[in-house]
Length: 69
Image 1 (cartoon, helix red, strand yellow):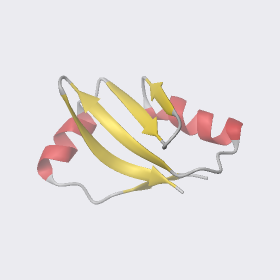
Image 2 (cartoon, one colour; image 1 turned 90 degrees about the horizontal axis):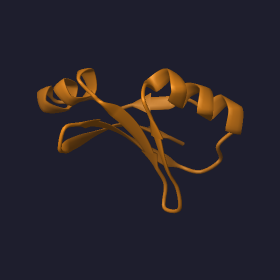
Image 3 (cartoon, rainbow, N blue to C red; image 1 turned 120 degrees about the vertical axis):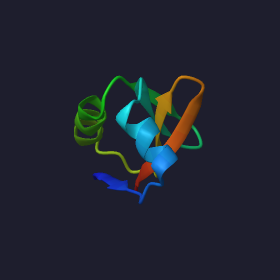
Image 4 (cartoon, rainbow, N blue to C red; image 1 turned 90 degrees about the vertical axis):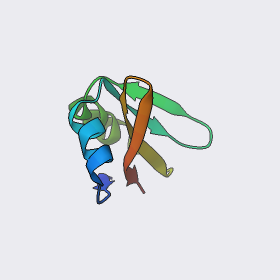
């Protein structure tokens, strides 16, 4: 599985490019990563079967940047 990136508006682009960390959310799990390389490695290592939403987090705000299906 890989990340399917969404089309981002300017606000989301800014958050994505300046993110302090990234999160992957499902209904039952939340994982935090310092960068997208860590997240990609996690996806490959764990053979994820659930749908996850991927968020970039910057200061007190976040932006949904993609999904893992």
